[in-house]
Image (cartoon, rainbow, N blue to C red; front, side, top):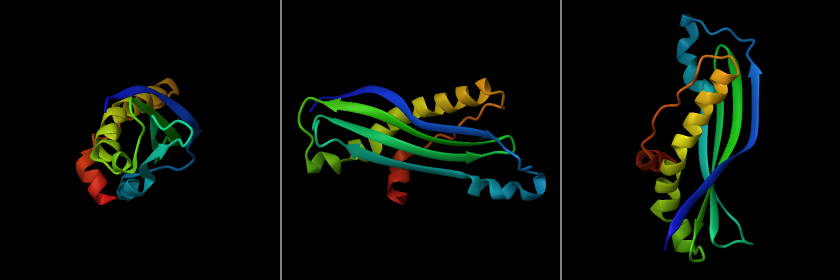
Length: 131
């Protein structure tokens, strides 16, 4: 099966200036201010296409950002249940698309007048196991 990364698209984006002040005393709570999920999405009308949906909720002392971001992939064969549960869908496709999300977040934060955010790198093999 040939698989092609097609494009990415922002489904929704909310950026609000933060009213919370984060100090060194409560810096440990920042771990609670970063929520990140990944889920594949399949289209019953187009069985040769799937999406990887990233949901990110990020709070800093400057802003609160919530984004739903999709990466689209196509295949030359119809997608079956075996493919839906494969490592490609759950590990490889997110690993291919994630750098685009990282770049987008850095650009949107700096172009919005905030300190640029560089999302951490992720080992998607371990990430998938933790899900």
